[in-house]
Image (cartoon, rainbow, N blue to C red; front, side, top):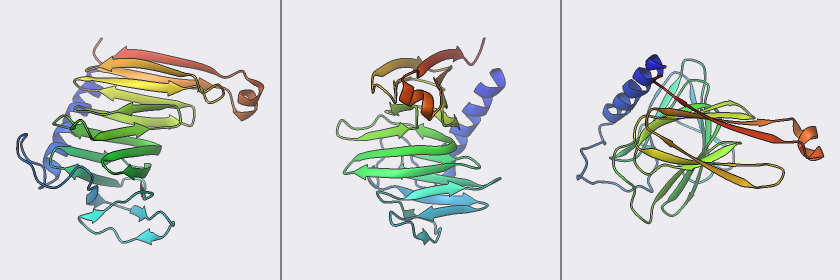
Length: 211
C-alpha cells in the first residue's frame, strides 16, 4: 500500500508540472469552463457529440458530448484552468458533459488521475462519475478506476471526498466519505437478470493506503 501512495503522489506531482498553463494558486487565467487537451502520448482518439473523430491538436477544446479514449501504452493530459489537471491512463475511455460551469467526466473504462490544487468556486462543479458511483471534486488529488462494470475504486491523497453510490434497481443512494490516504471500493453484485429480479447487493469498503 505504501507503493500505491508513492505512485499516487508522483502522478499528482507530474500533473502539476505537465501543463505550461498551470500556475501557482492565486494566479488566474482562462476559465474553469474551458476543457482543453494539452498533450498526448501514443494513440489517443477524440470524438465530438456526433461521433466524428477529430484531430488531436494541442490546446483543442473538449465540448459537451465529446469522448476521449487512450489505447495501450497511451496517455492524455487535459486541463480545465491553471489549477485543475486530469490525466487519462492507458486503455481509458471518458465522456464529457457540461452545462455552464458545471462539468462532469464519466469514466467508461480504465482510470483517470485528477489534481485540483485550488478549491472550486461556489458556482463551479467538477463531477466524476462511473457506473457505480459519483463524486464531486473540490480541491484535492487522487484517482478513479473503473475496474469493471460492477466495480469502481477511488483513492485520495489529501483532503476528503464524499462518494455517492446508487442502487441501479431501487435508485437508493448511499454516501461514504473518504479522507487522504484512503481507498474506497464500490461493488454491485449481480448481472442484469439478477437486477431485474431485485437481488442487487452493494458493498462499499474503505481501506487505508498505509497500514
